[in-house]
Length: 195
Image 1 (cartoon, rainbow, N blue to C red):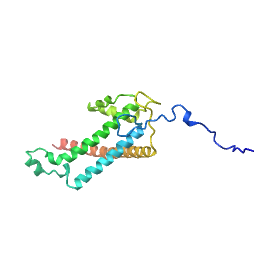
Image 2: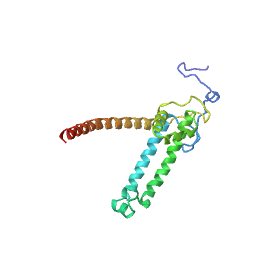
Image 3: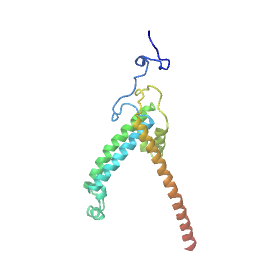
Image 4: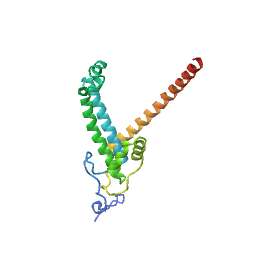
């Protein structure tokens, strides 16, 4: 006699379901593949934190731009000494590669060529492109570039923490900036009236 559990979930053969296992599993550092909005933002946050930590470490070790003094600039004819700038420049180029890769993958998610990223070099258009990349959802299902990529749980958590901190930073700038600007305007009025 076979006993069945009436509360058991129905069984399904998921391997034969079309599109079930068709997800983008390319390396995060590959320009092939896709990044959803939260993955894109999470990886920007992670690389930004690592870049900041490494820059602070260079400064703490007395290496890089943070070590340039006015005396060094005068000795260099008023310009920046390349030897002091080289570590920061190399670090910046490494992280620029990451940001380009993440941008290309995000554009692929919206079924756009990575060449659209060059619009980031155009003032004002770069802001619009950044907003589009952060706000527009990607194509559902596979597109011309790859099948969709699953967003890992840690990526979701990091992205939402990054978004919350970004909004908090904007609110802080507004809360401090508006009164400071009003004080500046009032001081300028008083100076104009008195002078």
